[in-house]
Each structure stands twice: as structure tokens, then as C-alpha cells.
Image 1 (tube, one colour):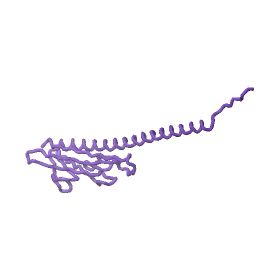
Image 2 (cartoon, rainbow, N blue to C red):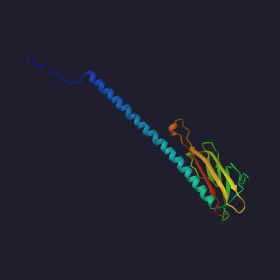
Image 3 (spheres, one colour):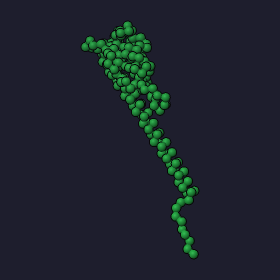
Image 4 (cartoon, rainbow, N blue to C red):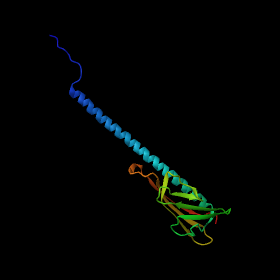
Length: 173
């Protein structure tokens, strides 16, 4: 007698394959979303770092090439914790650096009212400290500010904050 051979899969075999495919899809989607989140964090950190580096380099260069620190628009001259500092260049030009709206989403660092940071970042804290050893010595300016992304988000992977510090001596006293 000839036996009939059945072709196909049993229910157990189909369930095992579906279970394995489900595990593979879960692992793959987890890896995909992890990559997406890290890419977003990297982009935010890059934006904050580029803005901070540009602002710090500009302020350092202009202070270094200045003759002296002079009284700013707030009436302050070489005190700790100023949010504005004004320098006088050899050609007589005056440049005032200011931190405006600290802690708000529209805060910025400016040089004579020209933005040094763009609207993608906000200034969390900012201060200029100034010291001098006397009339015939160069003035030393300490710059300290913290930037973070301006967009408000509750997701920790999309939050970035960086601190920038530098100490600069006026070169043309």
C-alpha cells in the first residue's frame, strides 16, 4: 500500500517561526531607535558646541587685541560677575560684549548688539570678570558662560548643555 505524503508545516513549526521573527523585529527596531536617539543627541551637542566655540573665539580675539577694558553701559568697570564688558581698541573703536536674557529661550551673547550665538541655543549663565595689577600692567578678563539648546524637551537624550571658560589678557596696553 502506498502511503500518502503530506506536504506543509505543522502548527507548532509555524508558531516557532512567528516567535523567532517577532524577536528579530523587536531587536532590530530597538537598535534602529537607539541609533536615531544618539544621532539626535549628537546633532544637538554639535550645534551647542559650535555656537559656544564661535562666541568664545570672537570674544577672546577682540579682547586680546584691545588696549584696555573701559566702563560698560551699566557703569561697571572691572568687577566680578559682570554680564557686560566693554573694551577699547587701538584705533579708538569700542566693543561691548553682553549676555542678554540669561535663562530664557531668546537669550544671546552679543558684540555691539550683533548676535554671537544663534537662536538654536540659549544662554543659561554668563559672566565676565576683570582684574588689573595696575596702570602699567595688562588687564585680565575671565569669560564664563553655559549654553544649551533652546528647544524645550523632556527627553533626556535631546538635552545638551556645555560650559565654556577662558581667561584673556589685553595685549595692547
